Image 1: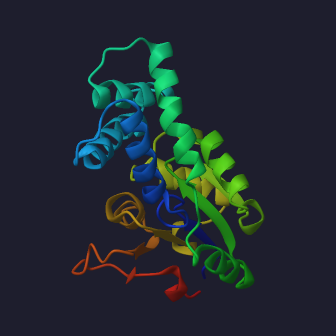
Image 2: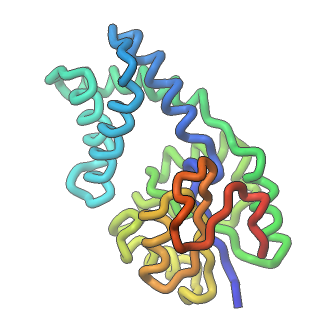
Length: 219
């Protein structure tokens, strides 16, 4: 019997990608960078260093500094890297928005008597700020951020720790997220049923439950 639902946050409930893309374009221009590939470069650089953080090779702050140095190709000291990153971060936070299907899906899950938790690879403080600004705190029962866990998704330790916090068995939980590797395959690997939120139809042939909008999610 289903007892709980784990929702990913970024690009599942919150349009993180649009916020990040707009922020880096404006921030890069401020730093004299206007090439056509800057969004793609920033995305790749960010994903690479954030993955290092999720594996605990570096800290959350260190991955921010590494992103700045690689993107700007400048060996700046820590304090300058922090100041530079703040120029991006302020714009990024100002761009946070929820998808219009997010709150209805959370409410349907709770109306079905399920415990609703967010399992995110984000930093706890930043994700709590995001929930507060977007009015999502009252729509969920629990936030589980990877900074609270031994490892981030898709590591089995992340999902095992989330189950412990929920007080449920794997077969009693559903994982809903936009990342095939981190959310869906990571969950399935430990016996959790999962649904892929594929808003851009990026995975038309994968053999997993797949929806294009949270409006299709039923409990």
